[in-house]
Length: 155
Image 1 (cartoon, rainbow, N blue to C red):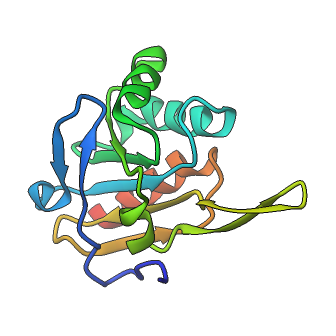
Image 2: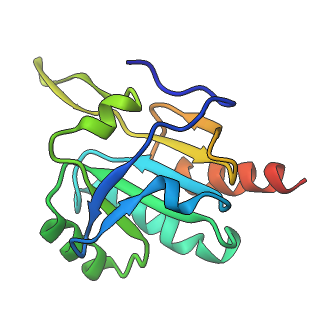
């Protein structure tokens, strides 16, 4: 499945967060939401990305951040606690949501092929439509692209 394009309705999300609570994207309508997918909690790139988003909190207003990985809620809770992230991390162990967003794909490392998350981010506007899509985004670019897109959305 391909990634949702700007202007299209964001694919639905209903997943458990790091506290075992059910979170639905549709419940957040009316607010901008950053939906970002990362491969694995507490790895170097994923930590850089999450901490960068945490540090941008003052610049993003009432934007909701949803970080999604295949990790179990318990692991996400430890990741959140260890780095004081303060935003919602969602568990997608069967990668159903990642597939709907087109970010579950074949990857290659050291000549070995495997299926996994392609680090990507999507800004969903208050209307529930994708405002921006950043497939294959770098961990360091996520917060700056988010802030720029929110500024453009507000203009």
